[in-house]
Length: 132
Image (cartoon, rainbow, N blue to C red; front, side, top):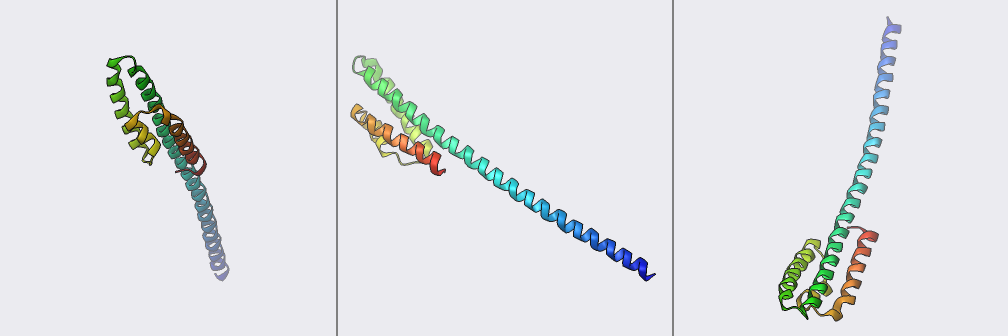
């Protein structure tokens, strides 16, 4: 009888050890999965922020074209106003302080364009390098 009890106890111990080993492996897999998900989420967030900054860049170019057209066509002033509004919305969508872009939006001075391009280039580089 004691041999049977010993065999049952040994079997129970092996089952318990197997359960502990299986749980440990499941925890490791879950940790690796969480790490991959966090990296994927960070990558998606960076792409979204860079996309918003690229949108600002596109609207800045659109505003510059509208300002240039307004010098010869008086009807192009509506396009300038519309582009200024879109630029304000695009800057707000980034959630960043972009002082050169904001100044260009208000003043529409072509002399400010190199500073705006530099500011946007630096912001995009920072997002890609350092993340959100």
